[in-house]
Image 1: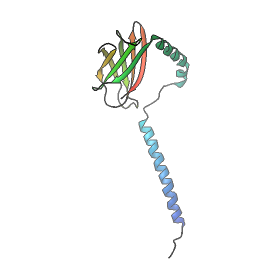
Image 2: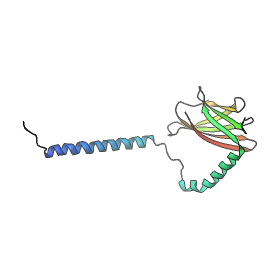
Image 3: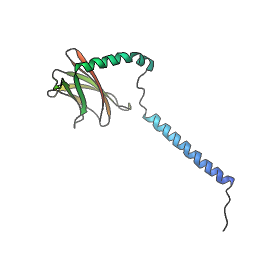
Image 4: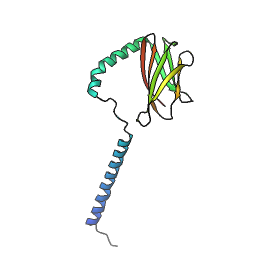
Amino acid sequence: MSQRRFTGRHMWLTMLGFFGTVIVVNFTMAWYARSTFGGTIVDNSYVASQKFNGWLQTARLQAQLGWRARLGVDAGRHVTLDIASGGVPGVGFSASGTALHPLGRAPDVPLAFATAGAGRLISAQVLPPGRWLVRVSVARDGHVLRLEQAVQ
């Protein structure tokens, strides 16, 4: 029985296979990262940091209103907004908003809401299939609640 020797050619093929695999995986991962990134969260992080305390104060004021709101999507792909004030389904609310695709691949969908019963508003627009980030402003009696939620 003869044994084959491990030669320089074997070493060359081993190194080529190993580093070739690493390079292919790195380029593939970089391509996927580049093709799925939809943009920035904020355009200027310094300016956003300067506004942060104001955003916290706004959130505290919104919490004091006692409004509870929940966004969803019905079977017809309309955005639904269920809202209660003090635990009771709310009346007299108006709302408008925008649905944004999280990866920026689809255009934004402006949303206009109509009343669909006590404590329920429904959008006139239909969302395309997929996951969406919905930003809504709900108003009543001069007070505004801003809401942001992912829906699918």
